[in-house]
Structure formats: C-alpha cells, structure tokens
Image (tube, each protein chain N blue to C red):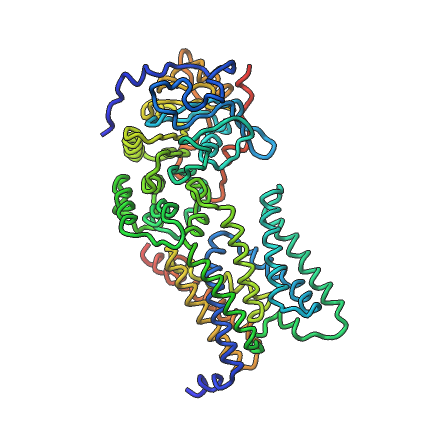
Length: 313
Length: 281
C-alpha cells in the first residue's frame, strides 16, 4: 500500500547542482540560517571532507536533509555512498568541515540513530536467530545489567510483524533468503525506535516484493517525521520509491527531488565514464551487485578507492 | 564406586578438581566470544606472551599471577593498539609480538643456572600441584571475569555480531574490544597452572568450537560450551589419576575427543546425517 507521492513534494525542492561558491549558508549560521519558520535540518553538512588513512573519499560535502525526508544516496561504486552514511552515523571522524546530526555531533544522539550495514559486512553463520538480531536493536537503550523485558519483546514482535518476518522469528539468520535477511535488519532498526535511519544498500539484490514491502515501511517512518537515508545502486528504484535524491561521487554532485536521476547533466557528473549515451538515453554502466549473496570468500570493498576525478572538469 | 571416590580422599586431587572446573568454566565462556570474534590465534599468542611475565615474577620473587597478568594484558593491549593504528593485519601483529614475547621468556629462563621444575609446570600445566592460596587467587580472578561478562554479555554480543551498527547506536565498541582482550589475558593467567601455556588455547577454543557444531543459537552455544568445559576437566583428571599421566594433556584430549564426536555426529557435519541424506536422495 504505497501511498502516492503528493505532487507538491516534487516541486518544493528544485533540482540544483551543488556549486562550490558560497552555498549553502556559512557554518557560523548552521542551525537556523535559511530555515526561518521551518524546523532545523535533521542532517546538515557544510564543507565536510573525510577519507580512510591518507586517501580522501569525500570532499567539500554540503548537504541538508530535513526531518521526515526519504532520501536515496546514489552514485558509482567507490563514489562515497557508504562513507557518507558512516560519516553521518559517527563511525568516521570528519577530516574537516561542520556536521550536525539531530542537532548534535554525529554519534551524540546515537540511541536515536539506527545504522544498517551492507549485507556483505555481516557474518551470516553467526549463531543468532532473526528475533535475536532484532532484539539487539533494544540493547543500547537497555544498558548493561538489564535484561530485555516485556516492552522489549513487544517491540521486537511488532518490528518483525511490520517487515513480515513473524513466522521466521526463530530461524538462524543464515537459513534465511537474502530478502528475508534485509527484512530482519530493517526490523532491528525499527525496534530501536530511532529518529534517523541510515541504511547501506537496504534493498540491493532483493526480490521486488521485498523491495516494495521495505520501502512501504520506510515511507511510513519518514511520513511520521523520521529521517530516512538509504544508499542504493538502483536508479529506477531511487526515482520510484524515494522523495529526495543525493548524487554522490567524491562529493555531493547534486541534491534534489526524485526527478534528479533523470537529469542527464547530473548523471554525467555523478557517473562520468560509467555512463553510456544511447541516442537520447543514458545507461549507467555500474558494476552493481544485483544478487542476494556474495559467493563464498568474495569480499566487496565499495569504498576502497577514492571518488573518480570527474567532479571538477 | 571406590575408583571414583578414592581420589577424592586426597586433598591435592580435590583442589585440582575445583581449580580445573573453574578454569574450564571461565575458558568456555570467554572462548565462546573468542571463537565468534575470530580470535582463536589471539588466545595462543597471549598465553605464550605471558611466559616472560611468569619467569620475571619468579626471578623477582613475586606472585606469578602478577607477572603473567602484566605480560599478557600488556601484549593484548599492544596488539590491539598496533592493529588499529598500523597498516598491519591483526594476525601479522599477533605473530610478531607472540614470538617475540615467548623468545624473551625463553631468554630469561635460560639465565637461571639451575633446573626450575615450577617453570616447566607453567609450560605444560601442573594442576595437581596447585596450592590452596593459588586456588583462592584463581577463584577471585574467575569471579571477576565471569562478573564482567554477566554485566556486559549483551554489549559484547552485539559488538561481536555487528560492530558498525553497535557503534552507531552508541555502544563503545573500541572500549569493549580492549576490555575483551583484557578478559582473554586474565583467563589465560587463570588457566596457566591447570593446563600450561602451550595447551591453554585448546581450553579456550575447543569447547566453543564443539558447541558451534551442535547449536545455532548463542545461548545454547554457550551452554554447551560450558558443559563441555566443566565436564572435560573432571574426566581428564580422573583419567590422569588412574593412568598416572599428564593431567593438562588429558583434559585437552577429552575436549578434543568431544569435538571429534560432535564432528562425526553433529547435525551439520555428521557422517550419520550425510549418510541419511544420500539415502534419501
């Protein structure tokens, strides 16, 4: 039951390429500048750079996402999608710039943040059942010593129900299909009742039914005022299911509404050499992982290489 | 029944039994997390790294617990720090420090002119010779380790399973990692007298590894590991008493037998299961 996008949403935020001159507001006014009357942004980055060891992955990142937004982060492999999510989650220290997440430093409101890693980052042979994984979402708010109580069990049951996994609650996670695993991890995020969802490829490689179900849940969360940010390889899915788009390749190339992914200029600047123009149409030649599971022993390093140098022609 | 009750008439046997059951229990609990974290090699490394501490404590006439704890905890923290800071893989750092520390221990050992039986006991284990004072110290350290795990089992589990999500939701994952390395080091110190430096890794890893073959839920896995970890020392000690052979080795051999039995009969790996499958096909 995906609710139709109100057309107003599509025109509120115009498509704009993020320039490097004077935009957005100066860091000194980062909280309320430009938001007279509106709520402060849930996630706000000004001139942020970050990387691993001595390799820069993201530079000059300016980004602003409001509470209640449902945002897809798109871009090529190694372009910095996962890095951007980790940065907002407080898992990476920024090298420079200013970040505000839920009105504090990244990680300051950690219990209000739910991060879901890529499927490749999880050890699926780990001896936990679906319900155990979802219960982990309750651990941070329980704190040491306290055991999960009836409220926690109720929250877990409710989250499993929302993602349609009640029947599989007691199955070991490795025995689940790729789509079911993604459902369980979203349920863990739901069970922690966060204000901010950071999801790394939540619907990559899953079947259509799972994609529809999970996006329905996320859409509802966003409409209730939560901030939802998910990376995705799938531009069609991004355009169809999300209300705003952030295109990333070494920096934030563009930010706007869902029609952004249809803008040839944006695609060119985001995917650069990975784009093939066939007549009027642009085809993204991205080595996306459209499969449920990596073969045994295969390790994916999405962020191993810094963004390809196409952003400053 | 006398063959079961007869050894209990000896005070040294009862002390050894109490000590090795405690050691088996602590090792099984810590070993469960260790195996899930992929830190089996770390257990081997830290036990060897404790050796120079034991020898130094002997030379300085200090309690061996003190020397072993300082050496093992110090090495654990150094491994954690170098791996996080440097660009080396964890197993590389472990390999370098573990061999280096053990070499230092052998060097110190070789400076002692006369034969020192006590120190050989630390290499191969000598639980039948454990004193009342050592047993008391062992019990205190065991309570500390088990107490910390009782308080933090959820946090340790979450940060083991999904360290990124755990950190993002506010758990101090790096601190928990250092704490856990410290717990491994303490567990090894506790175990040195019972099984010795060389065999400690088996006490840590084998019960949990056996349980992994039999269970796919964390709570059951730990329960099975604890049962194996506490029963094996009892069987091993009796076998050692009756045959007058090395106790530490027998404890480990009993655990290894349990592992092989689980391998042969377990639901996933078992030969019986494999046969049933081919029969059905």
